[in-house]
Amino acid sequence: MTGLPKNFLQRMQELLGDEYPAFLDTFNRKRSYGLRVNTLKLTPEELKRKVPFHLTPIPWANEGFYYKEEDEPGKHYYHSAGLYYIQEPSAMAPVALLGVKPGEKILDLCAAPGGKTTQIGAALKGKGLVVANDINLKRAQVLAMNLERMGVTNAFVTYESPERLLEYFPAYFDRILVDAPCSGEGMFRKMPEAIDHWKPEYILNCAEIQREILDHAAKMLKPGGVMIYSTCTFAPEENEGTIQEFLKKHPEFELIELPHIEGFQPGRPEWVIDGHPDLKKTVRLWPHYLKGEGHFVALLRKMDGNEKKINPYKSQINSGEIKEFYVFCKQNLHTTPEGHFTLFGNHLYLTPPEVPSFAGLKVLRPGWYLGQLKKNRFEPAHALATGLKANDAKRTLPLYDESEIHAYLRGETLQRQGDKGWTLVTVDGFPLGWGKMVNGILKNHFPRSMRWFF
Ligand SMILES: C[S@@+](CC[C@H](N)C(=O)[O-])C[C@H]1O[C@@H](n2cnc3c(N)ncnc32)[C@H](O)[C@@H]1O
Image (cartoon, rainbow, N blue to C red; front, side, top):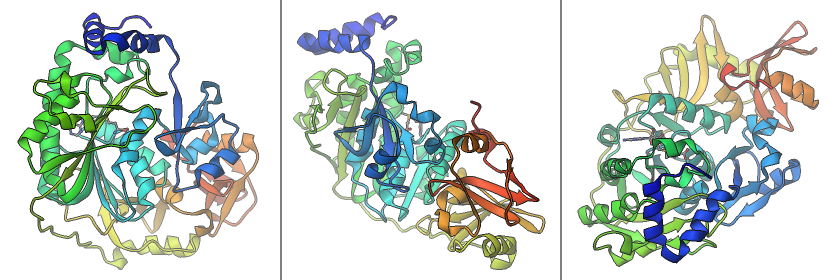
């Protein structure tokens, strides 16, 4: 691989010494590819039986598999059905180490495009709440789309600064993930364009932003709660350095030793000034020790602090206002989603009960997007389709023929006889999206933004 910055290589040589040739050699080797099974839909064993891919387990993620480049899982219709998420193998480590349990309240503070949020969503098994935030609206939109593809129904998506989020969620979360913006050195092999953005000054800028983000995150964690800090860079200033500064400022936190999983290497206290020996409890993922790109992970526990009173969110919506939704459910579903409804204009959402009052917050998705109230009718959202089970719908159209599945994913109408009305299109029992049957034709409602062009 060419074009690696000289000062980057020089610094890595100084830091790594004898290990440097092995590290450097990884840039001449092919990277590994990973996918993570969406356990909201099926088990890893079930996926393995279904797909023709060459899957081998990733040691640190129970639902993660390496695949071969030629498998191209992104071009399989199971990808559109949300059966898996294509994720760089090392990037699966932070959530695997976070220890999410169903029913908990989790914050993913720097969440877009959502690889880790969808992993959290699967671990929550539909119970509890994940607040998925990204400061960048455009990126948060991609995050929302990925959550919808994977059928995560208990996410609350915001595009706020950590400082503003703190006003709404003080000492609130059981677990927090800070997958921080960083100089991205660990991604040089996967995304060579990261090389062009890299400058030595970038490292210190990133470190400053990371410290600010962590300060606010710390205050959003409950006493007794845990927080993962992760980056995809090698720079000590953004890894051990950021954690060292954080611990100095926050004596209420301690580092928890991470498990010594195959290939994981301990953090390097000696790479920062007066590095505390506890920094060895953090983990570095190196491409010359394991099959994955460069990452850093630290697990922190908040030992004490005060609980804060939160104003619960109260839905202001009465059933009369959303009667078209109830009519839709009666006509088309065997189930009626119930709970705290939220209307943004005419867009209807089901807000997880754990969400506090959020007036004034920049919210993109206040929960599960159900659909739009139109004049005298309700139009279901794609997210409603992916969050349902096939047998929740009164009318389904199972597709078996690959060319027909592809035609549906390209947005084409299908010739079909069947009862008039909203129909859940499925493949192998998994919802793909909506169609509307009218006079022998299934009108295609698969979202334009997700359509196939091949
Ligand atoms: C490393 S990426 C996150 C990747 C993501 N966790 C995943 O697994 O798909 C870092 C993200 O942090 C966002 N970001 C940058 N500054 C931020 C801030 N101050 N607060 C919240 N998010 C921020 C960026 O927009 C970027 O999407």
